[in-house]
Image 1: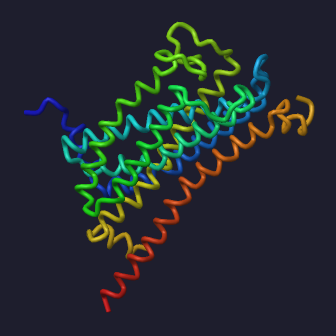
Image 2 (image 1 turned 180 degrees about the vertical axis):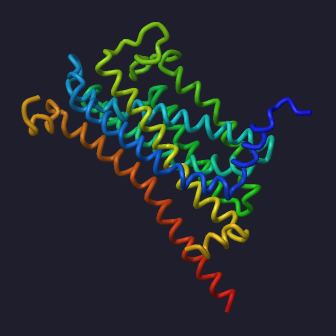
Image 3 (image 1 turned 135 degrees about the vertical axis):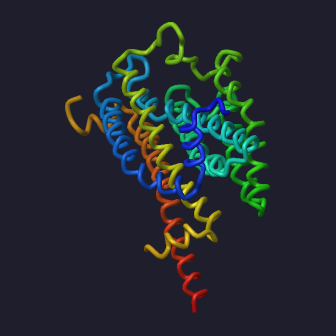
Length: 252
Length: 55
């Protein structure tokens, strides 16, 4: 007797099988892309055009609409990787390995975007491209963690060993995530404190907040789309000698 | 905002704003394009291998 309902177990085993995951990604991609494009279109229109100019920062603040969602994604994707790493180590689920390694380049990209757009925002507002304050430094370490996962995976020939190694690295590196989040409170940083995630009331006007949240949602969909594309390549490489891949080739 | 030129100028911060959006756009586009190209190439390679094995 199992505590977990049978249909959940079935769903788990089904999704965990590479051919099912592969065809599911193919089916989901156009839907995800459509939602992403609608959100992106509205987010950009509202952020760049509808939202009012900031009384202190002028129009330079509009960088927020990619900077903040990208920074959120850089943290979110790392947590996804750590969870996937834990699942892979505990249950040896193949798809968890694939999700972990396929997320790494996208997480690295969002971290890079957060750093670069922050720099482009910092120059006109703070008068400097870069400063070694806690928020910026911990985010830079996050970029190195992502690059570490990618190169560690590439350095180990055997995919099983490589998956185990990156799962451990992803789990160890997760301590950096709360450090990044709380860095602006724990240390006196040049980077501004939280304006959106304050529990009582966000100190940002609604007309500025809505495009920010729409862009954040758009980036979540983007992550799903990009991750699935990388995952498909990874699955094909891993499963190249199986029957279902051979059948896939015959169909083409 | 009255004109398109004014919109592009971003109150004098045009360079910073558009560079930030431009770089992000390119990076995000590459993230989707690269795996799509890789997938195509890999499938082609696999098909070739299979053909050779059959001969």
